Amino acid sequence: APGYGKSGFTTVEVQTDKVRVADDAIYSTYAYENAVVEKVDGKYKVKPTVQEYEFKLDTKVPKTGLLLVGLGGNNGSTLTAAVTANRHNISFNTKNGKIEPNYFGSVTQAATIKLGIDANGKDVYAPFNEIVPLLHPNDFVIGGWDISKLNLAGAMQRAQVLDYDLQRQLVKHLEQIVPLPSIYYPDFIAANQSERADNLIPGEDKWAHVEHIRKDIREFKEKNDLDKVIVLWTANTERYADIIEGVNDTADNLLKAVKESHSEVSPSTIFAIASILEGVPYINGSPQNTFVPGCIELAEKHNAFIGGDDFKSGQTKLKSVLAQYLVDAGIRPVSVASYNHLGNNDGYNLSAPKQFRSKEISKASVIDDMIESNQILYNDKYGKTVDHCIVIKYVPAVGDSKVAMDEYHSELMLGGHNTVSIHNVCEDSLLATPLIIDLVVVSEFLSRVTYKKKNSEEDYHQFHSVLSFLSYWLKAPLTRPGFDPVNGLNKQRAGLENLIRGLVGLAPHNDLKLEERTV
Ligand code: NAI
Image (cartoon, protein in one colour):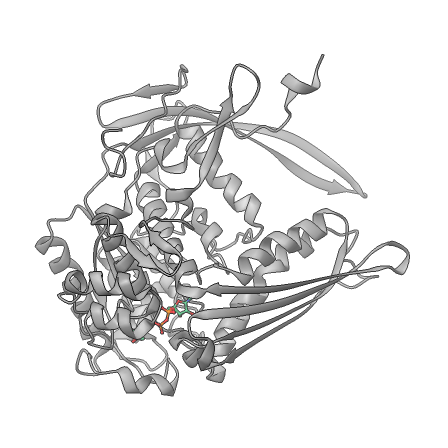
């Protein structure tokens, strides 16, 4: 079809009076139904609520640039290679035959959403990216920073992720791309990374570093004639920053701390501050606490979008499905033991205790909301925790093929037990890179959605700064202060799909299937 594979291509037209399609926007009304619950004397008092919203989705997809922090890493180079291969339609030979480029593993590019049923009651699905106008990855303008100055052809070869015949054809496209110099505070990433740190912004003045990054963002935007830029951290995992009163607890204190070049301000927080001050969405793909309380407050003050933390790619994604399945089935997980070994540079960095600790915290939080959802299984009598053990080891020989082994040990009725063991080998960067695509496509889309309460005189607002709609792709979802994260994968997905459906005038998913079940 004309326009297929390009930004803004849609094929879905909903015939409803809930939607008005204008030249540059889709206006919709949406009844948000929920219930407010109070527990009184062991009984639930539930009051159904309905709030009508008016949504406006700007339909013009802007020319968008993506600036990656860690451009020369495995994910950064694989993303750039994947977009280049798809954009130029570069196919390649492997021992299994010829492979055409694709975006498998990306929800926005390779998954579908149920629209409704056909005349015979059979479900009908449309591609995820053909319902509302979305940015297409082939149109990403990619740039970024790395503390290693190797160009992207060299970075791709160093990563050892792609087949040789594809690498060979990509070299001429990638060798011109050289990462911008970056910020390196050696105390934050593993000491073993110092060997690759040869591309650094000089000096130790942290405010000058913020200014430098802001200028890089502005120049990238101007040079490429972009309407919008998104910055995403896919650099090494940093250690946690200590939260210190007067240093990073409020927006003002954080800015003051940067101006004083305080030692607890990490490179990733410098990038976040620069992005926030430029009004550019900033997404954190690693586990560290970039978004210290002062950084979240700064984003709120500037109405800038932030999202994080830590890509939810393999083991944790499965955990957020499996733990939910067990608890929803009334089975009581008592221990989850997760082992990983990997041999890429991420694994090398995570072999240092402080960086491992960041990952451990991020991986551990994923079952919390499921435990809290079920007081029959988790209570004072049976205990309120699951023994959750996380191990990561660096085994160079396996390279980018990460191995994950998980054991879920649960209690059944009458003292029975159920143990599920999972052994998963996956090519780490090919699993993670499509998540970067989705995070960028969905962040860009969310930044075009505005809303107001129906019939209010107010202007349309944008969503809250913390883009928790992105949680599907993130291990430890950053959530608006005062709210709990949702970890269950299906709930995260439903929230996003229902938003997309609502914007085109469709009700939330409904699985009652009454066409079949009534006579
Ligand atoms: P990598 O080690 O291959 O790449 C990281 C890159 O960041 C390197 O090129 C390094 O030179 C660069 N870097 C380090 N500090 C920097 C700084 N301050 N500024 C600019 N560049 C800097 O790692 P990979 O595999 O690409 O993963 C990237 C991040 O994504 C890691 O933190 C990892 O934990 C996280 N992640 C990866 C997943 C996956 O690959 N499946 C899943 C979840 C998270």
